[in-house]
Amino acid sequence: MYQLKRTQFVRTDIKTCWDFFSRPENLKKITPSYMGFDIKMELPERMYEGLMIEYTVRPLLGIPMSWITEIKTVKENEFFVDEQRKGPYKIWHHEHHFKEVEGGVEMTDIVSYEIPLGFLGRIAHPLIVKGKLEEIFKYRFEQVELIFNK
Image (tube, rainbow, N blue to C red; front, side, top):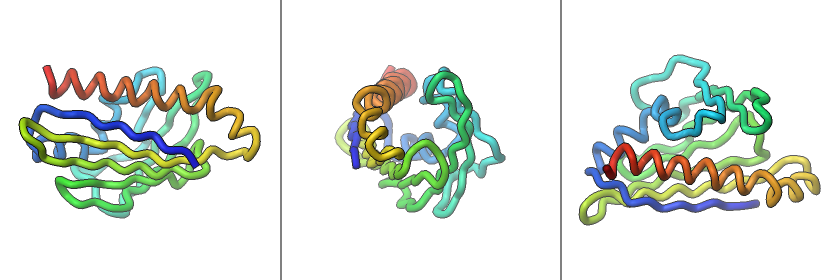
């Protein structure tokens, strides 16, 4: 299993930060357009435990892929967890943590994941998957900077 961890300072209050990240439709705003991210269902205003969200993504070569995630845990203004139910990973567990600090919010993403295909997946990780995930989270970091830390 692999893990990606990113921490970012967000210059806003905890409520504003939580309100932005707890709305599933805002994920598109912080996802690179080349990913072809498209939500395939009507969404509630706020996420809740048990919410299933279906997307289409185009992670490689523009090939569309269905991705279904479930919001597993929500503790308002502190953290939420989403897990893949269907998609490109064997395991995808994404923790989103929010901590009020002086002058803003410390936001931490922890993604624990496993690639399918056994040996081939282990080869693909350093060659393709790891770099692609780092690129996506770099883009996300930059977009959050533009939205909150102008």
